[in-house]
Image (tube, rainbow over the protein chains, first blue to last red):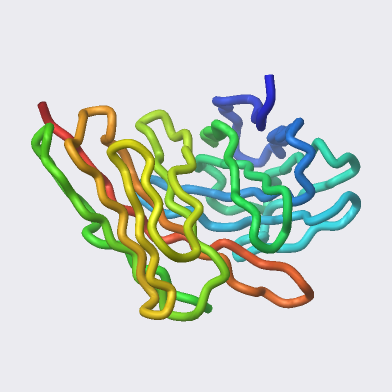
Length: 113
Length: 112
């Protein structure tokens, strides 16, 4: 089954705990992205990666960290430094970094209690 | 950075009605995409349309890049069309890379 798999779909954590969200793709796409969406809002870019072992900060990177050790995987860690981590997190990929069509996973909904 | 404005922010339609959603952008763009976010949060690609007109069933889109806008047409709307429609534009962000900037979306509710 081809596509982008995000896990877990729902996650509850206590304040102060780090959380890692998984994003795996088998589309052989080079570029991967993490977006955050708050209720009633658009999407904001957290981090993106164009190739393995390289990634760049987006507009709201503070309190988040990523890694890109494999082409297929781009996990996002929400650290305790993120002041308001409760949100819907979306992973996306595309096959070229400049003009390729963007595809999204189903998202992970994080609630910090 | 580039500004992407979508209108209207909210739209309520009777099933069977037609509608037009608009996306304005403040600078030149390399391409533009339209997405539909369903009530479960999944973002579905509708159109990849840097310029010109495309059609897919009851949906069609037109982008006039020189005038910096794109339109999404929904004809004979159905309740399954409900959700939020986003447009996103690609702009050059330096060092050979491009970034998508999203509008805030149009929330569409189709009532039976």
